[in-house]
Amino acid sequence: MEIKNSSILIAIILVIALPATTMVVAYMLTKNPALRPLARTLNDEAIYRGEAVAVEIVAHIRWTTGRQKSFTQRELSNVVQRAFRAHGVTARVVYETVNSTDPVTITYQVGRNTIGPSRINKAGDTVNNAVAVYRMYQMTTPVRR
Image (cartoon, rainbow, N blue to C red):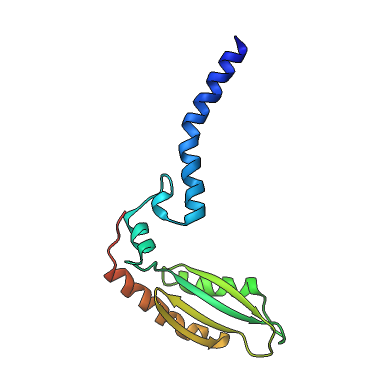
């Protein structure tokens, strides 16, 4: 009797879990948001098909290793993120480490727009530009959920 109950329990678990697991694996392989279970939106599909642009502010920092700096990557990330939070916007920080004696530079990517590169000591001057571009995208892009 125990084996029969165990078999039924395993069958029930497989029937419930197999479809979602299959969809997660399909999404991981294809990156098609239409295959992502329980989190699909129309905007995700439009971005996947190239009909819409994913809009976020990405700060690309070119971190040079051959020059002495008075700050760490973590400190710089915090400063950049605080600068954008002061405008009510979030930014993602991405580092590219380069073996060079050039100064550290930052480039902001907002949708299809690129602002920079600019030296890190002038990065604050271009935050307002990045926020303005981000807000223009927000005004022209309908939010679909």
